[in-house]
Amino acid sequence: MNDTAKKSAQATADYMLECRDLTRTYREGPHDLTVLDALELRVRAGERVAVVGSSGSGKTTLLNLLGGLDRPSHGEVRVAGQVLHSLGDAALGRFRNQHIGFVYQFHHLLAEFTAIENAALPLIVRGQRKRQAEQRAMQILDRVGMRDRADHKPGELSGGERQRVAIARALVTDPSLVLMDEPTGNLDQTTAASILGLMDELSASAACAFVIVTHDPGLAAHQDRVLRLDAGRLSDQTGSD
Image (cartoon, rainbow, N blue to C red):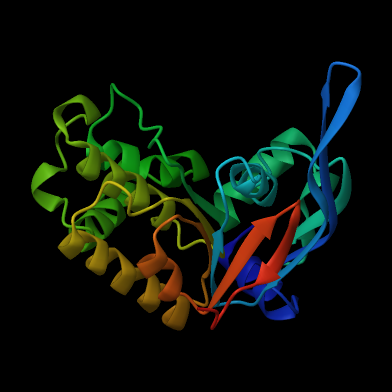
């Protein structure tokens, strides 16, 4: 999908992200364990939503479903108007590259690649020339304070530095939707604030939607809405004490 089609999909979708009756059940011995139970979620373009909940409540399962890394047992996930599980694996991979950025809790950077190569990789997979992709990657690395470390490999970076590279990789494609799993957990206060500023800019200028799983009450409070995941369903906590 080219940039024009991408913008068209954004413009025609009522919501950038929509989950309907989303259910995920796992088999544990003779029993079925329901992690997500007919969950409903709608996120508009440019909206930033935090998801909080106790450990084991299914937050990571939810992110994996929203990003097309897992398929629901029932219901659907729709991103920019497209039902994810209706796509085959190859088409889903292409769609995810065009529309979805993912920041994992544990980075998942490629050890043999430098920071700039890791950040540029989604653009290279898309077909951009290496030089052009790395120019764009350097712009984002600069925004997250990693310009001076761009030629270092993950093993030469601290945990917080690796997290910043992972954030740059997620944002380098100008995605429609960014999914984040504890994005500021390894960052100092100053760097975390710069990441929040970049998220604010993208949500305002590029209509990028964010869904952020976090245990950090400050990060959650900075978002437009705070949702709590409990017993497989989401409830609105915005404005709660």
